[in-house]
Length: 401
Length: 36
Image (cartoon, rainbow over all chains, first blue to last red; front, side, top):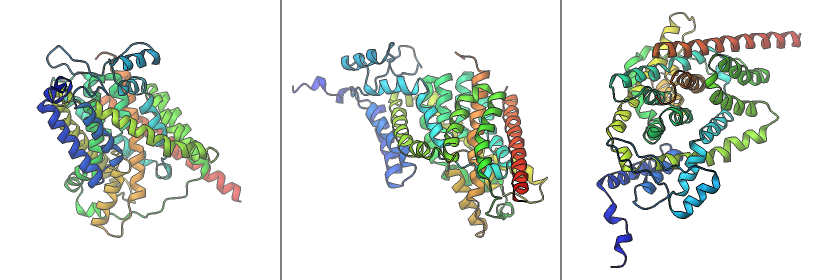
């Protein structure tokens, strides 16, 4: 009757319905509450697209083993083969973009280039100690790696990808997960980007628990020493050479970040930096976010591993925040001009949300304090630290583990 | 492995910080000499 057998109603599961509600919640947070709408809106719509049976925009495998995670169907061959498979209905158009853009790591790398083209590392150049705070923030990455292994539910590669969520650098999390645990890309990327949007909710309780009010009141002068154009130009080149020599596997990420930054600071490639920091990153953002959403059919999300990832990732954020705060508190033992520990919390590289949290908490404790520019130092340094951590994982974890 | 990885991260960023500090020192001194 009217081709009911062609409709998707009978194939719609409770899992699909719950995912549609989850997507609705994310759309509410993005559109109404305006929490990271550029990420949450495309991710949410991707979830809707993939949880309507037979929609066919992103086709997943149907695993036969218990507990196996469905993956996007892969087609071997070039673009021609992929488009033939789309025409036959074997895969969807988003499978093509996933295979050519995400599996090849092109999209996360280009996003990192664009982030570099918007980045201002002046606070780090003026006060290089902020780089150390960005490094100390990676504590949560390594602690959660160990905790994930202790649960005996995750392999080393999977545990590393869960830990890296704490670094709060989306492209780095995607880059590492595609390399070491591609079957977990959906949950890990969704959790990573969702928690980045929730930094204003996750961080303040940790901040208030670890930083006494007297320390939160520490006043920091809003001005830095002036950073010359020469320093700004040498910075990305020096950072890349030093980190690539020590951690060669971090070179792709750091290289892209610093290349983008060089375009921005050189003064002669403003057009390129402008394109990278506006239209190009917007295209990459909605493409990647849509793909991340389509990696979350109900069968992937309602899985014990995904629920464990949600819990462990929250812990990673908390311990990373703590790592940054403790680094500043330890540094203050040796410094005459004390640093407000709030800026250590901004080492969680959710740019610029974590820096804004430090600014808001700082002004609550001391209305004279304007910490935003100081907090941007560890905030940007956290991106470098997270890339170095990912590079270490890339070199220490063999393929297939 | 985790402890070593965290240690390497700190070490690399510490070396980077020292390099950046030295570059800042050299460029600032060059700027002062240039002004004189």
